[in-house]
Length: 85
Image 1 (cartoon, rainbow, N blue to C red):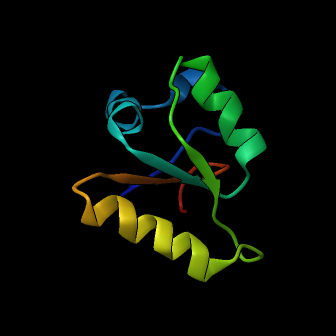
Image 2 (image 1 turned 135 degrees about the vertical axis):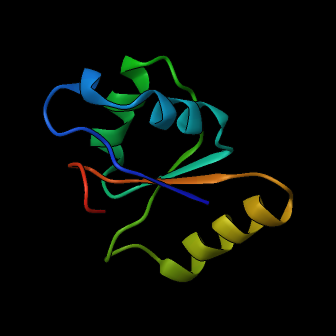
């Protein structure tokens, strides 16, 4: 599992490492999928995206994380508005 801070404002402020993690992730979890989908689309990254925030079904989401990791995959948890996440 990777925790990836995303840029505030200008999408091109994202780091190269953050982009690589997102490209390689099997699952991306985001606070707001609407906001995060724009970021992923901007960089041509197509990955499954799930919501992860205080109103999410945390048991379901944690299960998705566990499934991905147990099968040898990676999960990227991204912020909506930069660090800290």
